[in-house]
Length: 207
Image (tube, rainbow, N blue to C red):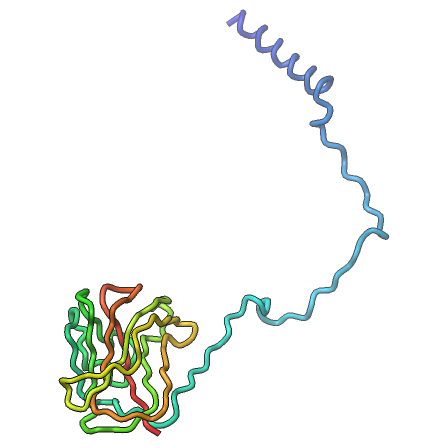
């Protein structure tokens, strides 16, 4: 114990000498006074609620439906397959929210066909997913076929990839000149958000 104490005292003295003599730059100087001429005063805007920079605001999307009436509403729908409880009849029930959607199995191509009950004239097809943000952005590839008897289908709109984005309504609208058919069929071959095709609402518009 007698030997340890002198060693500790020597070490403390050495540390004090180093701090004072060899490390002056580590000793902080008292703050200097700032000249008033160098100070710029900025007045804050009157604010009664939280403010957000315009560049960070998400633009509100306003849904504009195709002209006319949805003649597929409440009509019968058939599908080549469906996963779990997501049956095809849900795509014409007028409800795009919650669990009201069809989902095909991962056995592409997935066929989804609506029966308009008679040969009808129409000018637009709208394919929609739930607009809720939980349904993240995705792509789906599909084609549109038409038929008068439900057995022999003719290609109408060739297969291509479409983007479904909740920021823009999570929908795809296909507009064209008036055409006629009883059966309108979607043929899915890809979905980046799931194993099979997905549709919450399948709409066909007549002026």
